[in-house]
Image (cartoon, rainbow, N blue to C red; front, side):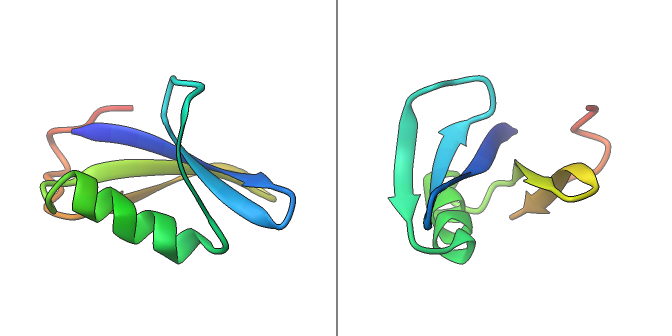
Amino acid sequence: MDVFRIEADGPQWKLLKAHGYKVIRVAEDQATLIEHVLTLTQGHGAVIRFESDSGVRELRVGDVDTDEYMP
């Protein structure tokens, strides 16, 4: 399962691999980046991490088996 992260960059959002520094895509909103992750993974499932006021959160998208991913 692929793991990505979304970060705020001023008025825009950027999508990166979880432990990478190369930006995969920049968008005006998070929904566009989430749709792009589903396209990249062909719906096979991914984890998207992002910062929130209460800390780092994870969003699991696509065909995700909860036993497959252990943080």
